[in-house]
Figure 1 (tube, one colour):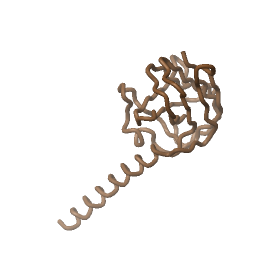
Figure 2: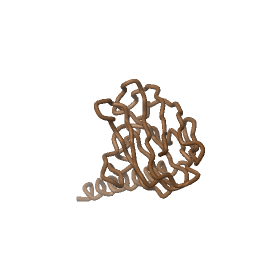
Figure 3: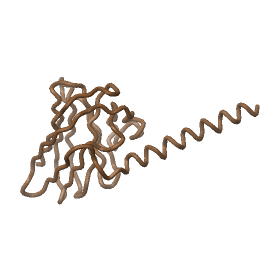
Figure 4: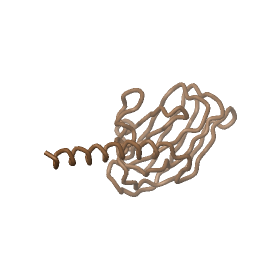
Length: 160
């Protein structure tokens, strides 16, 4: 009986530790690659990066975003890019071009809300189109479906 209680205590500690780690990871304020700013005069941007992380995105995000889209793949513990919106944007499109690699995208807003995207139509490159983007800094992760799968990509953003 004592061994069962000890096992339960260890499992509970591991679960709490994982939740605390996920919260800390999502709060990071630096990025692996270049960031960009969109405003009333600059409505498009394109930055590069590479996939290759081994951190489970569903474990970090809780599995889905505010609209029920699944948050998939593997990424780094730090965001890949920081996107700053100097004003609210009614509609924004984000697309990954990795020459056909199977990528995913997670965007965490300034309020902590998540938006997740996967395949674009029949292509395996990730994309996300959404509305009602508040002004502020957004953290963006570009992941791959396989842990450690390294490949370069371009992330493009277009405000409408």
